[in-house]
Length: 342
Image (cartoon, rainbow, N blue to C red):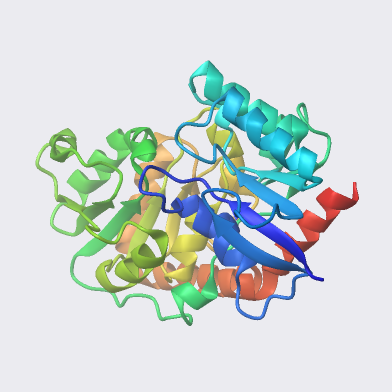
């Protein structure tokens, strides 16, 4: 009989999987045509009929997870003989979590048969808790993004954009001064659109009346609805991917490069460990290490349509040929098998 693998994805009170759950687990392990040695199910709790052979626990699992609930789950699975895989894509222990939730992360990692993370720096952090750590980089789901498309044709006014969750507001604010400088110097020729990074309209006051717009994806927040909304509603000439210097951000993945590349949008990226191994300056994107480089690269993008197209095509082709689930979904199967073998 085929073994049973069950995914306990991270969720909030609405019981819906978070975006990272879709990117990291649900879409890779249910990719059409993927060959797995298991029957794969998913949910917010264990199945009632039988305990699965393998259970993948993601991040903090549920809103009320603490040390007791983490240990209860671990004991239930161990008594049933289930194998436990723990997965996360952020340095949760570097955040200011309540002690009970931080210790739940430690319990999941310590008692798991293996841990799967998204980057090598994060793997280094987690190996202090579990020596069996596998790295599976993020990929985009080509079945959701659809076939590669052409970059946007140049217009009279260039639109740059940034999208991110509310937790990324500090990253945007880390380049506020060069952003304002570039928008002022390119007045009438350059504008900025922000998606998701702030629900507070007062954020626009930080730009002193410069051409900045907040776009809301109302009703399309779920990842499998957000991507189609982005494809239909964002008409960006180039995009930004700033990361404020921090230990937590050092463990972040290059997902922004994948998202922008899949949309045929060229990007300006922080010259940090997150992007320096992926982005090759002036080949598939631009890298900025300080405020002056952010300002100059933004102006360069705004002024050079031929460069924007060249960078967009290079990023798009790299994502679709090397960093999509069509080519990499099997990496998840291999990583889970390595965790169990060890």
